[in-house]
Each structure stands twice: as C-alpha cells, then as structure tokens.
Length: 257
Image (cartoon, rainbow, N blue to C red; front, side, top):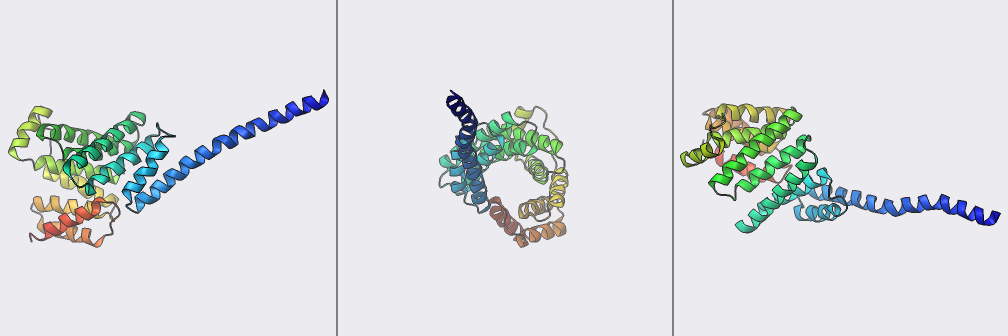
C-alpha cells in the first residue's frame, strides 16, 4: 500500500512537468517563427517573412502585434506584384489584417498607424469615391496614432502626406471629396510641410521622410529648402521597402531644378 501511495505521489509530481514540457515547444516554436519573420523583414525578404508570420498566426490568431506584422508584409508585397489585380488583392489583405489588429489593440499607436498605411496602399487600386473614403481613414487613424504617441515620427509623416495629397487634389476629386466629407477638413501645403518637418526632426535618418518633405517644400515654392531635403534623402540608407521609390521621386523632383 505504501508503495502504491508513493507511486501516486510520483505521478502527481511528474504530471505538471510533462504538461509544461508539452506546452513549451509550441510557445517556443511560435516565438522562433516570429523572430525569423522579423529577421526576414529587416532583410526585405517580404514573401519569406509573410510565410513564417502566417505559420505563427495559426498558433496566435489573436495577437495584434503579429497581425500588424502580417499586414505590413502584404502591403509591401504590393510593390513587386506583377499586375494590378494582384496588387489590389494584396493591398486588401493588408488592410483586412490591419483592421483585425485594430479590433484587438485600439489603444496602440503602431496598430492604428498600420491601418492608415494599409488604407493608403489600398487607395491606389480604388475608384475616386472609395479613394476619398480611404483618405478619411488615413487622416483619422494617423491622427489617433499621434494622439496616443506624440513622438511617433511615422504618424506625423503619414498625417503630413494626407495634407499634401488632399491639398493637391484635382478639381474632380475635390468634388468627390466634398460628397464624402461634407465640408472638406482643412488641408494645406503649409500643414503638410509642418507635419513632414516634425517627422524628419523626430527621425532625421529616414530617407522617405526627407524625400516627401522636399516634395512638399517644392510644391510650396520653397525651392532652396526643397533641394536641401531632396539631396539629403539621397544620402541616406534604405531602411524600408518604400525608401527606394521615395528616393526615385526625390531624383525626379531634383530634375526640375
């Protein structure tokens, strides 16, 4: 009897350890997948990053940080997609994942800005009315991110881009914008420059920020300052996928001098 009691005590001691060991490989595997995805992301290996993030999602479907990482990959894959239908599909997937992340973490600045960035990419593949509706999302979500984290450089940049794009709308899109917004929210090149300057101050090593600030300054007639910012952009390393296109826009703008 004593021997039987001892065996039960041993089982009770061992079972928790067995359960812990069974659970650990799953947790560690997911963590390893996310780390691997982050490494791929830093190397601009977007499709590979997406693949491992999606595998991790199978274990953590309600992880807002993971969902926004997946959104980022879909949005960046649009750049290299061969045809417009595929670009539109990828952009839609990125936006949907961003909205899922927001539903889980509405008070997180990076998550809110992920929605704004994904909306901006999706807008390229929509008609005039949907494009304006998505522009409202960009404005609201980037403003929310700035409110949550006033030092978030990318939020200032996206808000500045919104001001620049709305202030530069052609007459037809302005009519469409009025039907969406009612009275158009104030958007001026001066506001664009103010927000883009703040972004560049917060993150002075960002090639994208200096390129877009330079374009806004050029549109505002501030040519000497514009040249300085555009040239600055071309001296900086590419840290994200969009930097290459931004530096190309900077080169084109410099070609007008």
